[in-house]
Image (cartoon, rainbow, N blue to C red; front, side, top):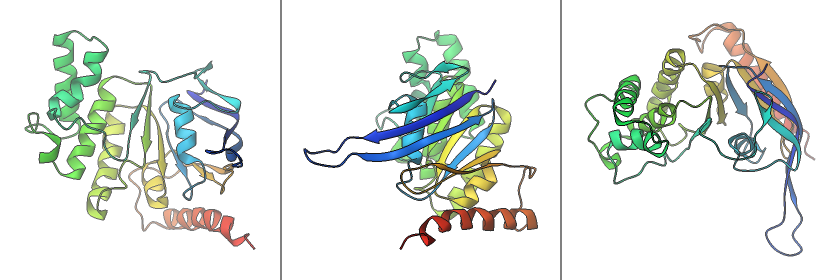
Length: 256
């Protein structure tokens, strides 16, 4: 059974003001994400990528269709699904350790167990020695590592990532992509990543969902057969990058 199943999902948002037309963000989407797969949802701004992520997170409900986790409808936020946001969303007054521990405290995990989980996840993301630092004392890449550790510490079944590396410079973004592959290989999860970056999707993913322009629909569901680590200059990677770029650019070539 698939971990995640998107079944005939559409989402319409009402207008903000009286007389405004409703906005159809997603239209009739269906795809499955298998257990422990790393799936990227790729497309231009406004194609409904983040809306799809919010439906999986339980922050929004579909207008039509349903989102299932192991056969059960998702009806709201849950510890089973943790989210890493683009802006890190760390508590600025809390240390690295306290930020990573926060969800465990909320779950009422016993102190000794919390301590072991926090140490393991701080080490997993390479932040040993920085436990007492506050977020403003860290680089952007280090803050994102804290966010990854915090999200994984609560042992979610699904990890959701909304453009998590977009605020980083090119060098740190490339480093964090490689680190994410290492972390995912160490602590396997079903991961759903929203990204604008074709290169990022290719480096990280087992599956790439390419979306059309709004209203967002699945244009192609690509299962990756290229082994990791992936060389961006390898012929099969170059060919795939060109193919995905043609899919996305084709959406706008059809405009008159």
